[in-house]
Length: 235
Image (cartoon, rainbow, N blue to C red; front, side, top):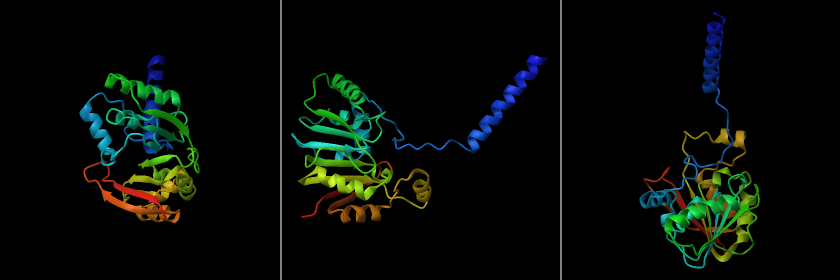
């Protein structure tokens, strides 16, 4: 009898917890992609993933130095290395638990094994802050910011820092969706401190930091139909 009562109490407690959890789920301050950091071993899936981040629209030339802001563990750079050689990738992120050299090396090893031959690319993990990238100065041919801009807490300070890292003829790629009325931008700003800027403000803020917009296009059929913006340092 006592065991039966205890079982019912435990059952009701579990139900109550579930109800409260669903009603008030814990708020997670995450900047990680919804799909995580997949390690894919299928060529078609790899190409689809790169296309979903608009990387199929960017040409990479041998010898270039590329920085990816908010790159996690470098999963995209591992995939790119199946198709491009002699590149140096700076894999930059604020999250040290995800972005560290050990985690990057594991991704690189996975794709080297998939390619069945060594990579000629270099992979360097680097951690930044809300206002600094910690990349070396005047070194990058291309800096990528893929679905990352809205999470930057101090966008102007960070973009001014980015400007110092590009070569004079370097290119800054910003890929982002346009937000709609369904996006609770005020909540994102108040709860997380993210800038959550609409597209027009992103562009004006970057231009105010000494860049000029040289190309803008939109990729339909990809995740959130993103805009692809290409900036260079203003002469």
